[in-house]
Length: 179
Image (cartoon, rainbow, N blue to C red):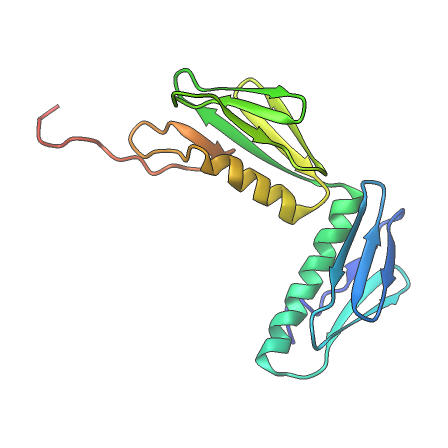
C-alpha cells in the first residue's frame, strides 16, 4: 500500500468537493480547482474525509494512487488557505517594481525586463523581495520558476533571482594569483 496514498485527506469547513466519473472539482473561499482522475484510482467521500483507493497492485496504479492523493490534498489546501513562494533579488542596481499586472525588473541587462503576471496569481513587491501567491500550487510554482529563470543566481558573486532561503554554492574565482 502506498504510504502517501493510504492517508485520508481531511476536508476543512467551507470546502466543497464534487466527485464525478472522470474528474474531481474542489471549491472553497479562494476559488475552484478541478483535476481529471488518473486511471486505476477510485475516490470516495466519507464524513469529512476523502479516501483514495486503487484497483490493483500494478506499478502504474501504485504510482497514480499516491499522486492522486497528493493532487487532491494540494487542491484542498489551495482553495482554503492558498500557497506562496518568495523570491529575492540580489545585485547592485537590480530592482523590481509592480506596474498593474506586470513586474518591471532591472536585472543588469541593457533593457528593462517586463513579466506579465497570469490570471489567478498575485504578486507583492517589498524592497527586493517578490511574493508570488495563489490558490493553484502548480501555477504558483511555475510563475516563480519563470521569474527566477530571467536571471538565475550566479556562483561567483551570488547576483540574480533566487528563492527565499535558497543556498547558492559559491566558487572562489580566479586561482592563478595568491590572495
